[in-house]
Image 1 (tube, rainbow, N blue to C red):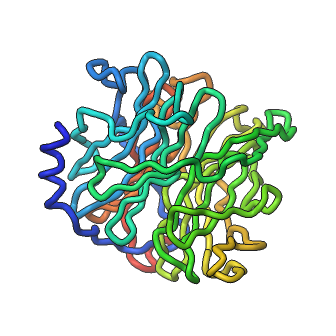
Image 2: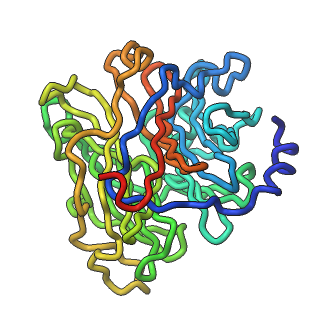
Length: 354
């Protein structure tokens, strides 16, 4: 579909979707036998070789998916697709975000994560710009999902580290990635969880200017066997019935505990921004001394279907989108050979998922 036709269609879909808050943890997700919902499109150069990093929101009864497409030169852009059933999608014929800025040159834009606050869509992480040397966490805003205003890197000059397969910490200068924003203001601040080695915590008064604690004051570190090399946020946190939030996240293992080295899987943790010890909100200072309430010990989703197990050197999945539609949860994820799958769970009534 062309952008002009989409905008006319989008004008009719401005209401927030009905939402039933879950308990923690989320119920078990199931995959269909052939659960692939996106494949590369050889007829469209922008997404001719790989599709990955799906992220989603729901308006009325329509799921909108933001996804990363790659061409033969490994340049990435962000595309848009939509569906009323969660499985069959119509794609916009042009990307909604692509490389235009110096920090995006060479690699392009990828890994969108979108929330809506007061009628504005915030693409947060908001796109991850990759110039073939460093990944930079940036932001963009929109009111129609097609036309976006970009902003410079959120955390310039960030010094990150990541564990290599032996467990040694390797420094990475000017590297920031993967932001997941809580779409409500809590204690006068918005909260973002971000990073792709440790998970860090940043806060903002306006959703555009963010302040993060220093590297050593990370929110969460790799801990469990399935995620002991690095962890990174997936979709934006979702609110539970008791006012806390569930963060679905991805992790990679060094290969202990029966996991293959570099295998990636998805898990979930409970977080509580309201319980963080906050400084003066007028200074936009982030939380101090905060951490996840609890993590689920085993991954909630991992490579298991024939197409997932046979794709890539190490069977892996990366969760990127979590939405609720018509009584079901849809968890969208990418896997090794550049395709996107979906896993589904039934929305549970209170007390029924024990």
